[in-house]
Amino acid sequence: MNAVPGHFVGLDLGTSGVRAVALDAAGRPVTSLRRNWSDAERSGRDPGAWWDAVRGLLGQLGARLPAGPVAIAVDGTSGTLLAVDRDGQPLGPALLYHDARARAQAARLAALAPRESAAHGAASSAAKLLWLRDQGLPREAARVLHQAEWISGGLLGRYDRGDANNALKLGYDAAEDRWPDWWLAELGPVAGLLPRIVPAGTVVGRIDRAVARSTGLHPLSRIVAGTTDSIAGFLATGVDDLHTGITSLGSTLVLKQWSAQPVFDPDTGVYSHRVLGRWLAGGASNTGGAALAVHFTPAQIAELSLAIDPHQDSGLRYYPLPRPGERFPANDPGRIPELSPRPADDARFLHGLLEGIARIEAAGYAHLTRLGTAPVARIVTVGGGAANPQWTALRACVTGVPVRSAAQEEAAHGAALLARRAFLEG
Image 1 (cartoon, rainbow, N blue to C red):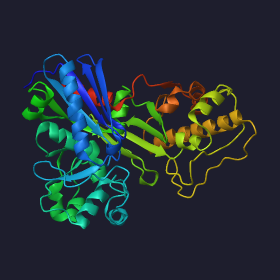
Image 2 (image 1 turned 90 degrees about the vertical axis):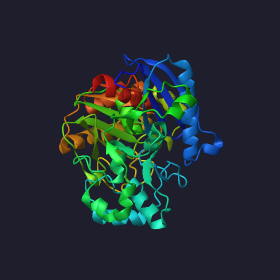
Image 3 (image 1 turned 120 degrees about the vertical axis):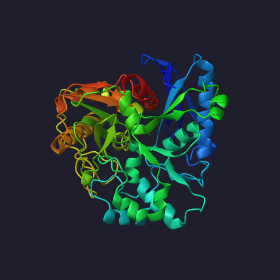
């Protein structure tokens, strides 16, 4: 039971499908697989589709990998929640990460939860649990679990464990390592549905025998408590120091950074996860790729960028947003996009947009520093914007620190590293 697995598998359940990555003992990728959602599965609410995809990919891995035990960790979308019975069978469709129907329940949480709690907001899994309770949970409900926790439970053959990263939005107190008293009092008997929480990266047991038989995986394979998709993506970069910021340039602008202590700022949506015995802080602005997409296609951005001199100031002072409202580095729901004057030259207009996003990035890291993180000395970039060399050089000029693209950013890779860490670096 104590033997070190020969390979480490990460499973990433995303919005477009499931990815699987296998690493060898040295952390080198051995194989990767992907299963996209079909049109019928695209809503993402059917846990049965998640399980079928995972089992299918593990079966392919079982046929590809050398004989011997593996370790598996799962990441999933943060805040996606479902209720299950004692056998782990879902009692309805999942409530997805962006589901915000629980507005009335969020208002109640606003009056109960400490300001620094990640339970706030209609899309939090805490609000979703209150919504399920208020709708009348079925008598057979035995547990509420997040997406990654439910898949891990299926691999284990039991559904009693959750991980501290997914649990944060369910009201878990990461600083105290427990479910807080205010939350247990509010839930009453429903508190019995909460799983036992362990740190991400904890070995939680041996693979279920039936799963091992159906996938061809070794029966001594181990399951490791997983994490959220965004944290797995951060881990994939391999960044391990306090002075490196990770910027995700996707549809939004997301900043993450290791911190020596937890930092929280509910007003700007900054909170901290405990990961591998340390703290990971972050915040997200509404600017980013979605703000660019209002004006240009990806092909146009690539072409116009070639005409930009990143070392020259555009002379424009934009605050690019796809629509009114900002949350980080300053919380301003009424903030309108600042995009004038617009020059006739599209390349100069794009230059101003990219500069504006870079200034928001710099302000975001400055805000994290004010809250208690170390000043960034370098930035590693993930997401679609990382492939734009002019934007990268421009961001280095604006932030005043070197900027480079991450060698690896796939969440499944990060989950595999988490599984490896449990045995080789823990």
